[in-house]
Amino acid sequence: MISGQVVAAHGRHFLVQTAQAEALDCITRGRKLDVVCGDRVELSLTAQGQGVIEKVLPRSSLFKRADAFRSKAIAANATQIAVMVASRPSWSEDLLQRCLLAAESQHLPVLILANKADLPEHAATLETLALYESLGYTVISLCARQDIGALRERLHGHLTLLAGQSGMGKSTLINALFPHADARVAAFSEALDSGRHTTTHSRLYRLDENSAVIDSPGFQEFALAHLSRQDVEAAMPDFRPYLGRCRFRDCRHDSEPGCALRQAVEEGRIAQKRLGFFHQLLAENSR
Ligand SMILES: Nc1nc2c(ncn2[C@@H]2O[C@H](COP(=O)(O)OP(=O)(O)OP(=O)(O)O)[C@@H](O)[C@H]2O)c(=O)[nH]1
Ligand SMILES: [Mg+2]
Ligand SMILES: [Zn+2]
Image 1 (cartoon, rainbow, N blue to C red):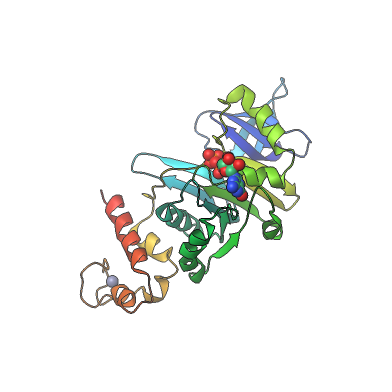
Image 2 (cartoon, rainbow, N blue to C red):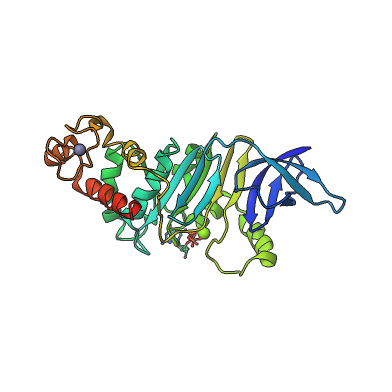
């Protein structure tokens, strides 16, 4: 048995990086096996020089979204999430918060990448992000087209998942980090993909033995139906100091008397829009 890491997943086809130089074209045995980009797997070789994935090794993390009907895994084994926003096309604070929740629920540290620093609206973007910086998230301002120096050292020793809405500049950053990435993406997608510029599948790029980055497709929505109310509360760092302090143990932080969270909002210690976001998510998840 050979071991390797899934660097791309296209339907039932997977590219697995083994100790060999070339990634191996693989399929899974049976339909049961659920394989995601970033997975560590064990495989056997067929006569045709193809691999068959026999086993997925336990994951240290799984970054995913899920609505009531299906769940969409984006990457496995990431050790940090880099969420990219940019002012053109406009970014959504709601989607950023959802991404933060998905990361926190897996105990993953987050970098917020404010890209397109060359645009005039960038200052307003940074102003909006100040709230998230105050919550403990690292905000890095950068221009993926020009200079990514600010980021390089933060990638060291991590499997970083690059996530964000479409058009924020994730793949541009990948191309800056990996000058040959473009060619590899094109060669791979020619056979399997439609050839659009937007990223359609997650793809892992290795920086060195201990560091890699996963480029992922942009999203327009980010449902979190798999998170319970308690999961959501615990994944909001500004809520944590007040959890368990409401008068009622099952407080929904809505109109109950003695609600510690609402009091914190009134006293300006939690932003009103964070509580609003929380209620919106609960309403969505209870539908
Ligand atoms: N002005 C400016 N434009 C940028 C910058 N970085 C990327 N872009 C542009 O933003 C557009 C989208 O970039 P992509 O890298 O394809 O965005 P993406 O996040 O990978 O998008 P999806 O694959 O659809 O999720 C391209 O036209 C880039 O040239 C930047 O720093 N400044
Ligand atoms: Mg892309
Ligand atoms: Zn409460």
